[in-house]
Length: 131
Image (cartoon, rainbow, N blue to C red):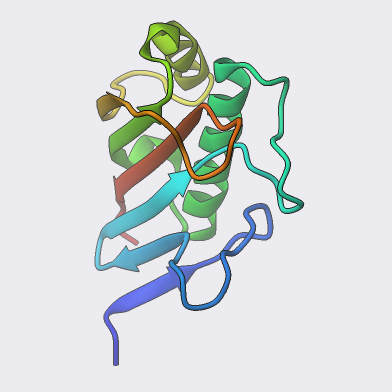
């Protein structure tokens, strides 16, 4: 029997079977796969800005954490992948919509591309939550 519990949210599309899990709980740790503004139909949500895409990604993370019984304040670490690091102020603005007080530890990495053309940002999270 696995010690991992798969978490699903009706607000976050599930990947094809046999590829990856959106969210797993391992003891007190919650791991959320990289989230982005991609839609179920292959489009990209929002207005095309880094701020809009980051907001959508963080909203998906929030939905998965809530499905696991946790909240955004339980996030200890974020890793943010962007295609243009000069837009990092928009990432900070989006983060302020979801966090107050002590923000989580964070790493920001510029990459050449994401899995879908037009995506500007992908964010993954690690949270700690005791039930």
